[in-house]
Image (cartoon, rainbow, N blue to C red; front, side):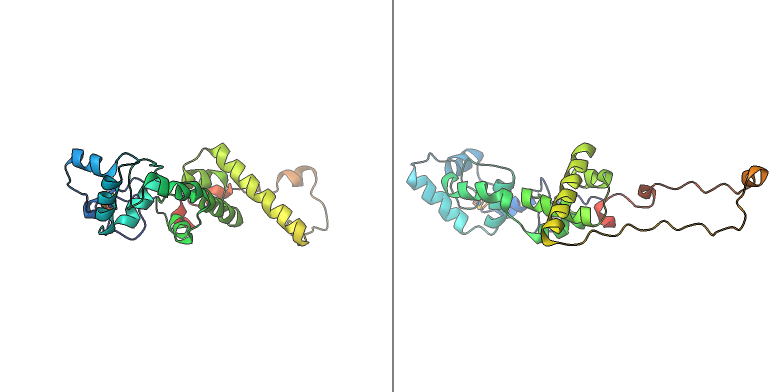
Length: 214
Ligand code: SF4
């Protein structure tokens, strides 16, 4: 089950997608909108206005959340978390490679956290290792079934090539359990009287969907 973070959810250090509750603790919260615009969206060479904004941000208790919010939502204009557009550029560029395992763990615990490209890759690898089916991964990542299937296929190829490179012997396939041998094969009428085999339930019927079940 997905856990959606709301404005009533206590802060836990990890924000959910679309959670802006942190802003009520910001120094700029409640500012006149025009003043806020002028302060936090100054012209690139307006050094005085930039210095004023940085001074406010320096004393702000939620500047980390503010910066993360700007990065995760690709907000490239203005001053967020005390950093100007130019100062944030390397952070924006490097974000897809950020790997924070607390986000990955939170994801598997059902939190609706933002995942970077790298974090999503770790999630897919773990999902493959855990034997997740494409439909389950699609629900968890909120992607199409086809995309989830492609992601799992890529993870399978990666594991295959890794094992090949490291010389890991291929896994032995499980042998199907043979039926107890009978001295006389059932034929004719006797064969028709054999009890019908139980229909095999698809694996997904036993595996609840959703990350919380991981
Ligand atoms: S860090 Fe700056 S822009 Fe962000 S909430 Fe605080 S005062 Fe406002």
